[in-house]
Length: 78
Length: 451
Image (tube, rainbow over all chains, first blue to last red; front, side):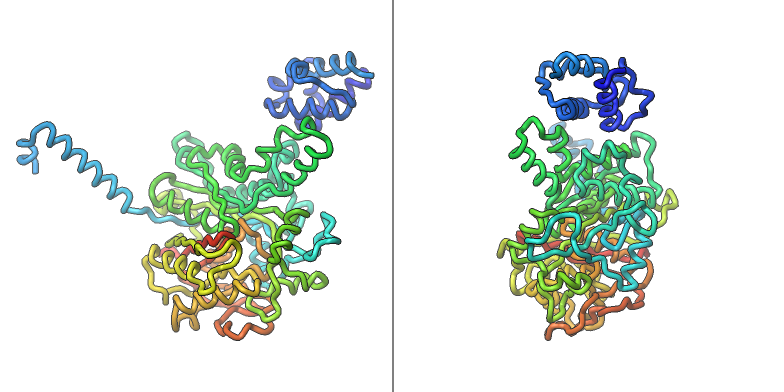
């Protein structure tokens, strides 16, 4: 597993207060991990903070699963 | 009646029915239901949970301590009544016991205190409605004087230093005053009236009084009501200091700083916490065999229409609030055994309140007992009236009057039984609790034993 994936999962676990086992790459923040729309806004902010990148609103709307987040960050880092 | 109706034209019959409906409506309003207290919850500078707090209060302990969680080195007042935090043992508050960690960041501190006190009160009452009908009949009315002042202050700095994209999506709901009622209703599925009071230092008393009226008028069978406050932050302390309202002469001896009616008092001491009660329609409580602590018998309100922060010098506002509460309770003034005073330890306010009590009660003022529990916990602003209503109910339940600490040399006019230094034992059939707030808002509650 990539370093980015580990860090994304850790943020998801901390912010949503969910078990590590539930945070699979295909897990949807809202459908599987109990997040609401405000939680997802906060998650995106936490990703921005952790990876020092900016995630525009239109891109943020498409980040609905753990894998979406990892893919976006890996594509836009550095 | 039937015969005469027979001869009425359709138009007249409709009018007649309308009149009957109006009369029925009026009867419904006039026949106010009895309201009793069936649950208590408290988070205070003397600790968490009513048994622990009441034990410390009646044993003359103080919850006023140096402020250590923020920098106060440049502030004139550096002490406050702080909620003791810990692992939840020995009366400390562990907020994890009440609110999931992930939800805590969605609430400013005052809401977490409201949740802790609210959960305690609901658990104590044993009222956990399962059916939709019962949930619809259960409401929440928790107020706050200032609400999320620490959160708003931090959010303002985030916006200034790091820009709008760094502001939490929870910034607004975490700091809104009525979200205390909102979060508690969501936790338990209370779908009745969801309301909130904001009347500065009278908030807690208004919240309980207004909620009791809602139960009395039939808007709900059960109301979970009270106040919460957590404004001991830099801007809160600096703001009240700028208004010259705080005690500044006892930073090295915090337990002596709150001294209502004492000659050496020099301002109020900030406090934080929450008090929540479960108010319930009497027959409803009886039918389910609930433990009944006491009854809310009367509620009075008034406005000073005088000054932003100072009480009217003749105590007229407090006088009228107390008189209205007695009238609504339909009891004579000489029935009151105990008064839990607003008594904040300010040079002006304490004697004005005492003067109003003397005027209202006449000779009986020298027979009743009056104390200020702010001497032990400080001034919890929007939570003050709520915890003081709880202390009044406990005085009724236990026959113990909580003391006024630090009353070493009462001011000249303060010649009543002010329960100085130590608790007193006395049977309390009726108690009155006062709260007065900035803006000249006054509220009084009369509570009593259930007959």
